[in-house]
Length: 340
Image (tube, rainbow, N blue to C red):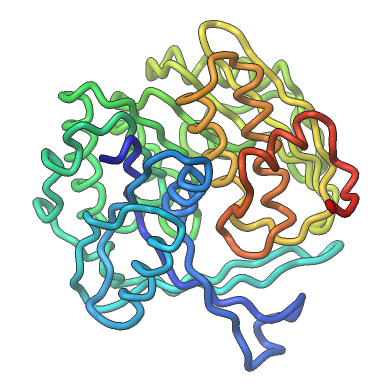
């Protein structure tokens, strides 16, 4: 039986080789990824029984998704099969002053066209300890809003902890609709996760004296952001990733968790990026592992940030690291020396 259920869309990810732009290439590498699926894979890598719930088409693309997830130890027994297509997206990796770029091709995907009542949440969630979703899932369609709400209501009935990564995507919905929908869902959320911009874009809650583009982070401002989220929605824990974008190739990376009236900030890593996409999801995977297995909040945030620091150096959305890898970095082994 899975301890953690992750619900959302998984897509095909098409990436040109190296740092080529989409318009430069006729060759794309296909992998699979999606916010909640990335988290499920991370948890499975850490030995947590995790399950991914979605809907995929009844064709070879759908079969490939299930096969890949199973290869990482993720339970797929509650994946529905049906609909017309698997969503796709293109990732163009940036470098130096040229930013990375994502192009979505996910309209009419199987999960976005799923209907209320298709997912038998009462049985899917039986005996589950944790449920994770992101703001991307309800942004896919009005049906997905209703399906997500169905799941969250049953989580509350069963006493299942719920985490939600706000993950605002301007290409999927407006700030106005995101605020309306996510506000209605937040009463069911125990752990709220955001980046520097999400709280502002979705709820209008902004940290003062912070310049995301310029790489200026005001820690005190984010404590106030977390307090306001706690007061407004009653969340028990708020986690905020703090990215300082010096360029597309080098980022400062740290995070804060706010719980029990106290804020805990991680150490900061300056990362030479290999692949930024999926970095936030790898933080969530580390965070959920920490909240499930570690008692000390400072150690929780350090584990989550170290795990996601390592992910930024790995191709593809899925984090491929082990607990041992993460703890080695936490202990200060960030030299990159060859391991023999």
